[in-house]
Length: 88
Image 1 (cartoon, rainbow, N blue to C red):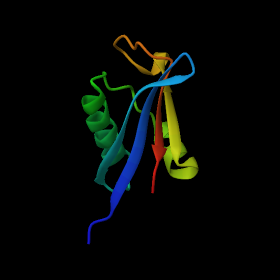
Image 2: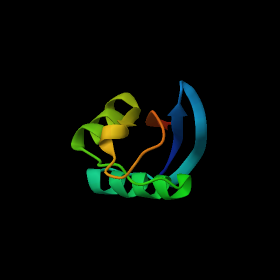
Image 3: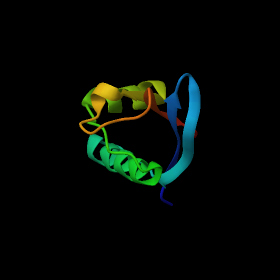
């Protein structure tokens, strides 16, 4: 039986959730599969994909969440932050 992951992805603007989704996908065990999940989430939210650093993956695994800010995006980013939280 394949394990799955549920992630609550939130776009925050002025301290409020501007847009969010709950993403369900295959469980990831390495940075590459985490990056693929982030790309898929960003596609669903219709935003560009941020630069995913090893620290983002580490924070998600250790603390069950990670945050991306405007400086993590190459393209323009119209929100204050992008938060991923583990729902499992």
